[in-house]
Image 1: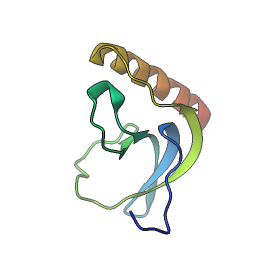
Image 2: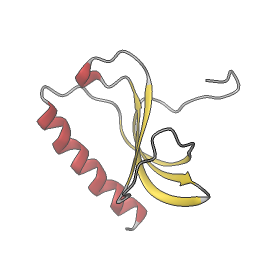
Image 3: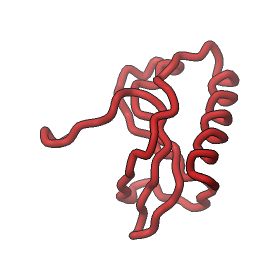
Image 4: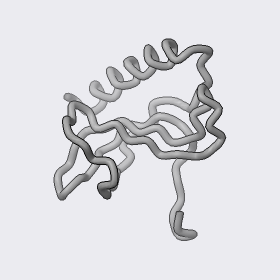
Length: 96
């Protein structure tokens, strides 16, 4: 990361992702993925309803709203259930 850049606090965000000059509604997690004990800070963007392979492609995001802080879950199933709730809330915020 460039010394002139900063990340928002760890957590889950409603975002808008820009890929190839097109805007897409998205959800973004910023943090250390405590459920899986990664220890490394990552930015993971999930473009809602997008089909296609974008690994290795450059994209930018606009942060719209923070949904919640990062949380450690006891199981991956609990995490998956929370992600579904986060997406539901994100869609409501985005109006889609």
